[in-house]
Figure (cartoon, rainbow, N blue to C red):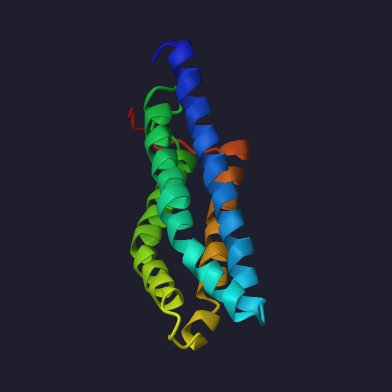
Length: 159
């Protein structure tokens, strides 16, 4: 890959990864508010907004991070399978994205409960959003540390 194109791919990867991190932080803040509030309207609102935030912000950034990471690694000297840290970042990204895709069902279910004014809010008082967002932040921080420190270790593969 030519240097300009490689830099563009890397820039897109960094931007989408930072966007994903920021979107998860936003989701976590909303989840904490929804979990800790005593106001039923705020709890409903937090759970209603979770659905579009996940579908239109968090998930697109996750997919963009995965795709731009693949393009960037394949177009750089680091390669996709040459270094263990790149492989580990790929595994983390795929794992987090798959968990997020599966978790959208829970988010959709909570939003449906929140949308029904006659529904009991007890299911919405679950810490699941906080736990999952916290876990996502840990995974994203590990990927960030790997990208910055680039631990040694070569696989011997040329891809």
